[in-house]
Length: 539
Image 1 (cartoon, rainbow, N blue to C red):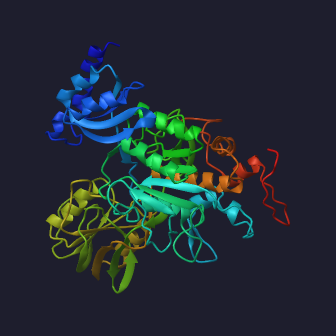
Image 2 (image 1 turned 30 degrees about the vertical axis):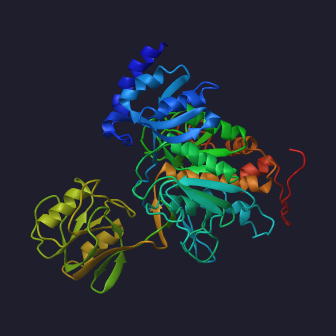
Image 3 (image 1 turned 90 degrees about the vertical axis):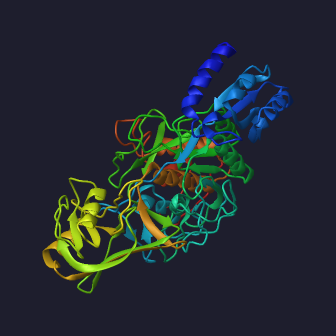
């Protein structure tokens, strides 16, 4: 295509794609953030042009023959007409694959082990304890010797149940060991929560070497493909064998794709979330051929309704109601007639403490005489925001919403909404009990959060499925570090438990990742009476 045609098309696209790009000595709407790729031998000539066009240079990637810059749209013509420039491409945005508010249902298979810690259902579902907890033999693979790099929102190293990482780097502040968002610490717990008497346990319990790249700030706002390429290079420099990315974006980027392909050729196994958009859309980097794309399933091994489905989905793992570590300690209670009941916080509602007589408001879909009362509402028909606001507008001091189906839930008022009263969620059984036995009794509702703190929450998302696969890869690989990333990837796919349609399909990929099966496929040997863990010379 002729450069003038490219300029016309690119300019039109950029008007739509870069209206929120980073400002560079100009109004943000007049500035674009792009990759500028140059011909062999053209690096210095392109740099001269960039330096003369009010340009901010974000990255210089000589290995990709490209700069990443922000510059005024008016300067695009000069860049595109430079004979040393061969390509100009948007610097696509990357987001945390946002976890849905999690829930623990009665069907969840979490168990408490002999040490008193919770074993989240996903740990056994991916056969982690079938590897490292078989008769607690000292020689069993645990993930040790492998380095796993988490690219996310940071990692709260002060958490009571998280092991120390071997190191890290922050792209957004000066402290990778602080996580003001929670996403990265939740991922970290699924991978490596310690095998102790506290909280939960991970797939590789405190044994894999963790390296952290803090990629997102506390607000979880978008970053860019170029930032991800930089993060990937830092993982490689730290000796990462596995890179875990619970993140993505809807647009591909050629240089980012090349960077992941190069890392794969260099022996790195990259694993990313397929996405939570409930559609067949591709998410990147998960949908690059060099990256494993992970779908989410529930405790019944059924694909989650939010999990993206397409021909790049490669493997599946638990991603619904996944209990793991978070960097804050949250307390939400309802005390009625002197008895304390635990609940959840309705996101974006107020925090604090409120007291009043407990009354029943039904669906809370209409006005009631609730002045000074704590109002019990059944979930259903209208939004949580509408229920809480009906209680607030009719004088209630707190809204307690209980589920309309078995199990607990976490609700939200929705982005941009808030309330001046506390909103609490309860399970169906508890809510029905209060309605039947405790109305007109004195009640106190309390909601508080301590940051930082050692807390635990159940979240949903392909973000939660991804660390299961990343950790299984490290666990299997630790048995024989001489294996290649290609051999590990093939073993995970070849031994996945087939779900959905026979063979690989768009919802489950090859199926549920299985650690023990993958090890045995690679030649792992264990006798029945005396367990022996030896890598075979011939595979």
